[in-house]
Length: 394
Image (cartoon, rainbow, N blue to C red):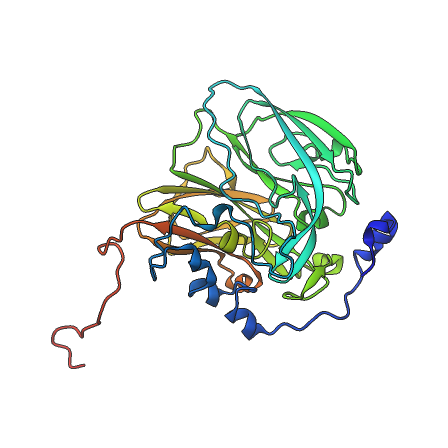
């Protein structure tokens, strides 16, 4: 494989649309049976991720002190020392307590980094602050927000930022596109409360997004949001590689597949297994969970669903001042869109986060919510037998 760090920008740009002719075939049966593909069959059944629990079968009474929330990522045994770009979904700033607008500074650094993608593969991600998605930022409606963006000197390409929370040309992206080692900054007034996506907007924009350059910014309404027990940050993304899904080694982006909308990998928080083997969401029975969910795209609509849960409240399209829908099973989130959902955990166990276009789980799109606590057989329980109704001849 050529050393692309020594290539000219023109050569690298031309290589983006090249074809990979020796992609390895993938055995679908093997993917369904293993953790590499994170298929529906594996995420719904027993998997190595249950080792994070205390060993209770079926109810996942996990020990929070030994759960995978902050342990070293080990799902990629062939590259144990490789960097990891997955964003911890618990990295949500606390609710704002001030009641007046303020001037807030947000700092971003765009970093291109080779890191884990799948069990036996790596990928050169383009990131904000070295994580996918980028950092979750929280401001208040009426705030003056100062944005400072630095492009790391080791980058190969120019980068900038388009915040959907901005009222202004390009969401801030029209004001600059710093090359490696360069910076730019701008200021905007947060006029509208809501949950908004941000992303890089250097052409080709879709390539920068698919390589990992997206995140969320929350503009809290006056009075803030209702309190909950736990808040999590989850984003869906697409990765387009020249090599087929499941191929080993360092994989390369495919511009042809990107414009044809043929993603090889679909992921939550950066890479396959990020919310299963690395950062599963955690809660206790009786707690209310809030998920800030975004769809980085750049192409697919998401049908976000938590198997075995019902969203008590769903704030669609990131609108926080519109009354939420209640008792919602699945939400639709467009590429470049966001939503906020809340639900109370009633039953202990392991719940699976998916896009309900379920074939996408076979390409890495799945996560876990692990709920510990006491069972309530009046809410959910197994029947030991299924006797025939009285008077039945069967």
